[in-house]
Length: 399
Ligand code: NAP
Ligand code: MG
Image 1 (cartoon, rainbow, N blue to C red):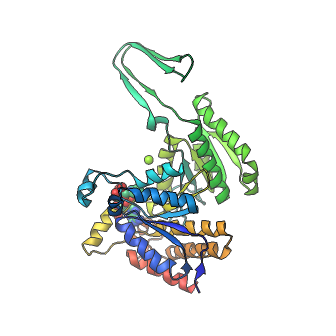
Image 2 (image 1 turned 135 degrees about the horizontal axis):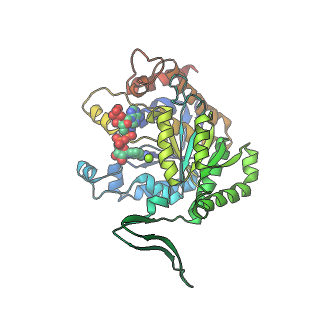
Image 3 (image 1 turned 120 degrees about the horizontal axis):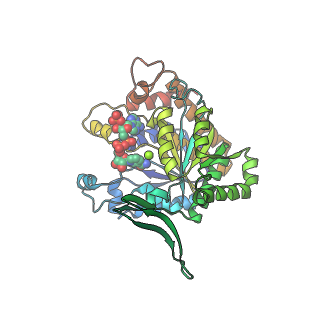
């Protein structure tokens, strides 16, 4: 008997090897067990091109309407891809489009399996990272200073007198940069972090350098203080604590912690630290990602791309060993979120059961090549793409 998932899930199909895996996951792990109302959008690059990328906007609007989406990895076309697929133009990154339409924040979370030990001994539970993806050095203006002269920071209000500050009196050549952020974006980020932490029931950490940057970084801290205070009841209800630390202290604490927290990061810190945490936990194939909007709309996906190299091997008829774990967990994330929203515990329970079938399959020694290379103990051989999914399917049947 199939379990009925009451509310709709917005399904966004994608490209290359992940599109192949996507279909196997649906056919072998989901559709035999669940009756789902899927709102399907084909974000494969050819279909984006055919619709002049309208389909990406439609999919984001559907997420806004229905609340939960799951997305396959997609090609962000560059010049080479435009030639390869004969596209009308190099369409923008679908993730970027969806993120800006939902005003969302991306959270990355590793999947932990016992036989893939993290590089950091104390890490026992996942460390999730939320990166503020707007502004700071990513939207800065920069100037090479050729020689002596004065650099100033000038703000000219829409009405009123300009305010100016001297940045530096240059005695010789140098460089100067002007960066900004907006209260609206910082507040959205703080709210998305609060939603995520409350949803995952994990503590929320935020670090910045407010001792040095007494206006810029302090502003981030103030907004986080205000928002966590305003949502105190939600956080306390979920048993979630909030901690502010200096960023260097946060880094030191993370290396000694056992994990299990959301680490909210300013844009640059998140860029750097998410790569550190991802490689510390082992493999891109074990990294999930979810976009959360301030209105609590969710899009789940794998953190990796379309695994192009494997796809070309697949097209040549060669066997592949592509890890489907993060894509499976994208589905279980969306399904369990749906179950929570619909108050259908049997749906969330199915998601947990599938996740544990995946983890036990790996812990019993069946895994794809990327994991086999770093597992302890090393398995005698690695599983091919479909063999791994079949092994999970058998375990799920038996469970
Ligand atoms: P990628 O797809 O993440 O793959 C890079 C390499 O990482 C692979 O060649 C493979 O290494 C390894 N890898 C990644 N995921 C794996 C998995 N599930 N199982 C096994 N190995 C895995 O990055 P890319 O090749 O640079 O990008 C390909 C396309 O993906 C690009 O067109 C890019 O625009 C797109 N992309 C999309 C998203 C998204 O939709 N969220 C994110 C990033 C990139 P080996 O070759 O050594 O086996
Ligand atoms: Mg980076």
